[in-house]
Length: 441
Image (cartoon, one colour):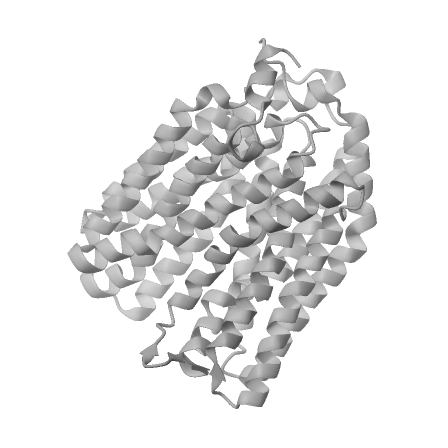
């Protein structure tokens, strides 16, 4: 490594490169702004704008779907023309503008469009920079995306507490304004911390012939990632039930009494991000110890274990609901979230890391965008599966969700040889110079 490379890769916060902290806090504030606005959106449309429930739900659904679709287009723009740094900055500015447009009732649709478009540039371009902070043989690479995932959950935990409280107590526009300020905070952190971030990778058109992946190898890589994405879509069909049918069950099928106090059903939704923050250091320490002994599971095996863990969590609810006859104690839901979150940490940050590492040269942002596109398909599947909630008993529904998660785990386990081959070929085809571009350019 030359002097500049050593500077950005040297241990800093959490013994990771300082650039990871810059990306962490930038993402944290972006998630804060996104979830802060999302927390208020339906209430704002129905209570302030007097939209019907059907109209508000349709606007909300289209917005969320668009939010996960635009990164595909944004990733292509980033890789081919703008580059990742400019895409992050331009995307953050557009999103900030959109959040502040929410202050005008007549600009609702323009505001939502601006946030979705800005997100399309921002979302795939930020995490695609993580891998370039490390040499390909750096043992810290494996845990980087887990720490980054904590930033997502810190933002998600703070957003309803800050933006939701401001919106409910002082007025909707104060909540939306706080979301916009959060986005500006993320932009400021990113621009001021630019010296710790890796430089741009060459765009596709600028790659030397020796740097271009042969067509056959690229086809195999893309097919492998596409197969993993399909498995993750299936997994999300069960995973995304936490904000849908699990929330309904917490309302009607759960004894939420803790002495004389009735636990608000929304509090259970805070358990997941809290547990992510608490459990990540424990899992990272475990994986680091396994890696030092050469016993760390391969990525696809980790992801399969995560899916099976979520399957066990739903199976627990199925057994509890069947035996409690609709009056389960709240402790069982807390136990569900412990199992559920542990499984989540084995699959979602690991999958994000896999898509970043296996991205073909010149397609880093596009590859990350494909990972997020799996969220788009997974949310649609979750919505379709959620329609079964009223058509069968709760215990039976949870058993079906356990089966869906187990199916995803089985498919991921079957994909392990293909993913392992792709990772092996990636290591053979890449050396430190190609994974971390020259810092003297």
